[in-house]
Image 1 (cartoon, rainbow, N blue to C red):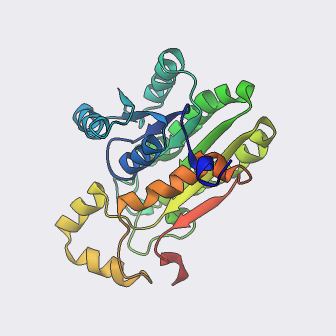
Image 2 (image 1 turned 90 degrees about the horizontal axis):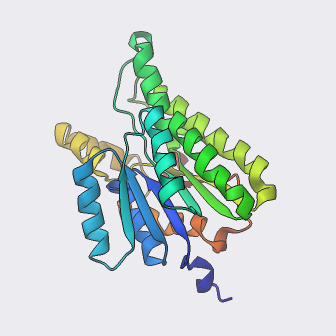
Length: 259
């Protein structure tokens, strides 16, 4: 097998949550270009439709399922549909997540704390348990959790800390499941992105234009990441090229954590 053959995903099926925009869309594109059949899940039907049209126009095999994964019961429903209608899933990318609030800890309501925990952590547990658990009898699988550099470093301007806490827990969950499931031929790794020019961050920059330059100046490379730059890393972790890597957290941040 040549080195490039190790990245070939022909015959594999992948589920990517939050796959209709931003980093999720680019990871779906990368895996699809490598030959995988891709299922994207997200909460917005219009965004899912647009993403499927875009990717299918490139002759990629992509389908979508609508589910609001901030709600645990919706995560369970997604698993029901996938396991019944789209088995087997060989690659699971738990990408959906977000901050959505910026409230100081002393003012943070319990329901807001729980909502962020469910969005960033609980749904990943449910999908790993059910979709990842179904990989065990087949003795092969790839699980990729999208964490954040904020799992390793609390952002100076951020408040509430529910995001950092949930991503930190997701990172340790990655390592724990990796240790448990290595014997089953399943690798579990995490990607910790730094600042990327996703749609959500572009909206934030639109409200606070100086934010773009402030962040860029704090990154040794002097710029934000482009979403398509995460695709090759996701492909590596999803393929046989990473067969001896599990329990790892791969930071992709332009050197942000160096300073």
